[in-house]
Image 1 (cartoon, one colour):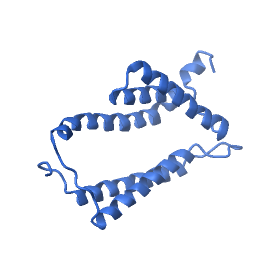
Image 2 (tube, helix red, strand yellow):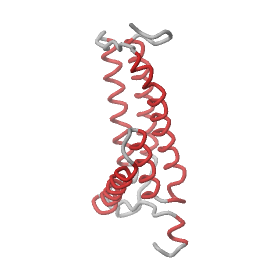
Image 3 (spheres, one colour):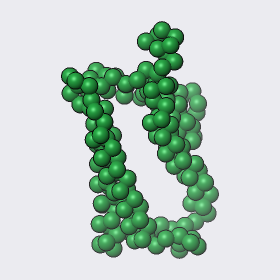
Image 4 (cartoon, one colour):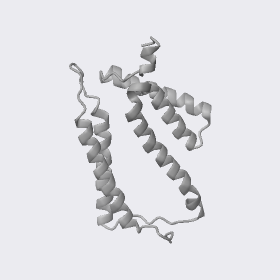
Length: 167
């Protein structure tokens, strides 16, 4: 039984799939506009382009699944209704975090922004703060090292670190 006002499964998958395809295509296009520095094996838009392409591919799968009539029904119950506000908050955190990273990357730096974003997301999922901070720091440092050492793409340390003379 679907909740009042909920979309049928096929329409839901068509809508979400179309949005994922359009958003993924936009990310791929925007990532292609990012220019690398001479000598870099990959431009800074390499990973965002991959993520955008995967989002567009996932959207195409959802649209195809809906067109073939294979969209699974979602049964609404009390647990799902109680979880909905938390899911909305998590979705807003993810979208807002990505936007904040895009806007404040140069000023605040990659590591602090990614650690804060990952930490907050984990805490929304119920992970304790100490574990969230530790795991976020390890993941962010690993991502920074992958960009810097493997791809040769330096990530901004943050203007505040440069001002303090630490970078």
